[in-house]
Image (tube, rainbow, N blue to C red; front, side, top):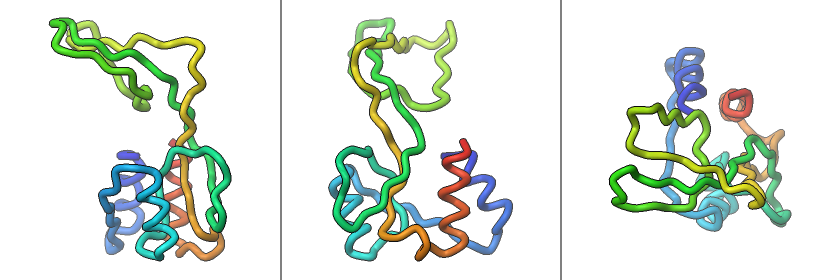
Length: 126
């Protein structure tokens, strides 16, 4: 998404992007339904009444471990994460778990402003 933010700012320097913190898909959908946001980045799943979803990326599950044994976690693999040989963190793929599908949610795609639609397309293009 960082590349899309940079590209959007370069194309539309007078426009602003506002990101609102929401720590769950449920909260993001509430903000969307309440008209407080135009787009919501969510984990896609079952159809949601009154919400249109557009898948953008599959995130495979990995076991993230630290070389110094300071912790571990099972998480979706962040896109474009580069873990080189000098990085103390390792991501071990977990085969057999269905990837999480993330993407955009909106009330109506044709009701988005041209700038919001362009931003969603930039993110989807990667």
